[in-house]
Length: 114
Image (cartoon, rainbow, N blue to C red):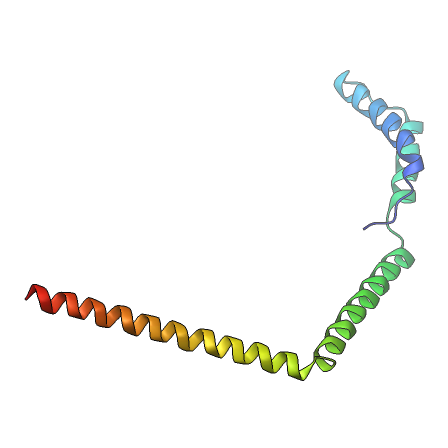
């Protein structure tokens, strides 16, 4: 997110309205309005310090997420994980058995029709 001073937003809007009004009336805007708009744009641009701060905050958050994830992996309960693995293996073998039974039943129906 860009660091910008939103308190100067009304000033930007007022200067922009002066510029748009003069553009639609085909008159040149006053040099003071142009200078003021230029100063506001310069004031609102992201500063290198803010960009570096944003990058540093992002890096800290990424490091925190990675450390939490690695802690969750290393602190996993081996008994719980073994039980989960066994349950998944049982489900897989039951699924294979069900498919085998369905296939043999289908073959039996086809043999009756022959």
